[in-house]
Image (cartoon, rainbow, N blue to C red; front, side, top):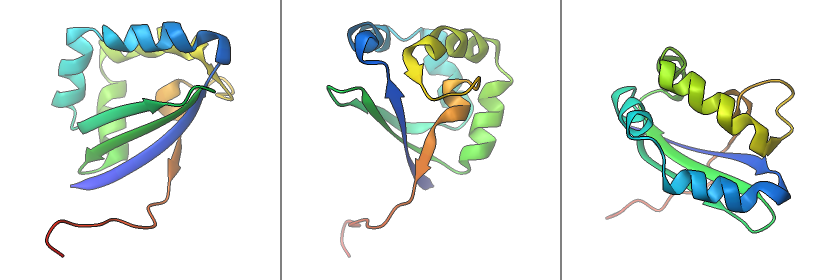
Amino acid sequence: MNRYCFCLQVKPGRIAEYTERHRTVWPEMRDALRETGWRNYSLFLREDGLLIGYVEADDLEAAQAAMARTGVNARWQAEMAEFFTGLDGRGPDEGFLVLEEVFHLEEGK
C-alpha cells in the first residue's frame, strides 16, 4: 500500500461551510471511496484554508480514475469545486498537488 499526501487551498470565506460539508459526507460517497481503493483517507485544514490530505492506495491514479467513473463523485466534485482556489477549471480531485514524501518512521524499524 502506498501513502500519498496532497494539498489544496480552500477559499478563506468558505472554510466553515467546507468543514460542515465534511461532517456530513454522503454515505454513498464514503462507500464509493472505499470501493475504488481509497484507504485511511484523512483531510486536515489549517485556519487560513490550507488543506492537507492523506490517503493510502495501491495506485492513486487508478483510484482516482475509478472514482471518476462513479456518478456520486461527479456530483460531489461539482459541489466542492466552488470551495477552492487555483483549480483552473479542474475538479478538486484533479487539481490537488501531490507532495513528495521525504521521511517516514516505520514501526519496529
